[in-house]
Length: 213
Image 1 (spheres, rainbow, N blue to C red):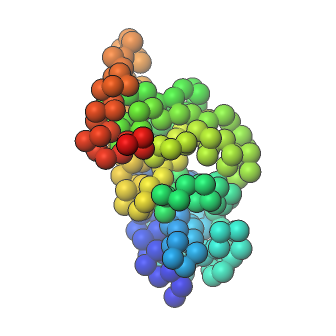
Image 2 (spheres, helix red, strand yellow; image 1 turned 90 degrees about the vertical axis):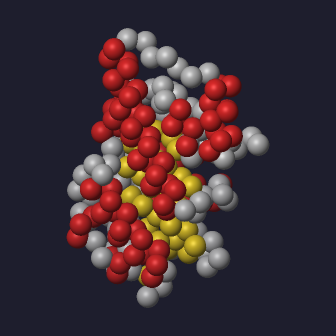
């Protein structure tokens, strides 16, 4: 089976998204880019993650042509391709509909450093403008908000995490849901104590996530 390991990993992490409460049903999507082969494994559209088997995962090329798989690819195919074409350090994208990150995105807020763990993705996680799901417009807005960071919020939609491996991209999504939860709680308590750029830079240096180093 073409991209067997990548397809199996997408099934595994799709189930983890459900288990960790990072999405519901068929919401969100996952992809892995095998740059050596120039092929991308992408979760199928409109399938509950617990029902997906490796054969359901689609294999596409960098232009979006289907190479293997009989299912329809995720509606967010343009967003995944856009990231891979412009971020050569990224080999996996995880898009979630986690509650607190999505709540912040529905406010149109950037996710600010109320906790140092935000540094896993960057000094600030920006929120994109809203655009209809599955469109080129959303893909462009996502890439703009992502910048050099490991994640962005999608306005009134959810979270996009991007990294060199699926394990790392998923970890970013998990940790940012925790930070988003704190963001919402602290906003309710009053004015959160936001860490400074210098404080975040020091954490990013320790994490090895500072893109400017």
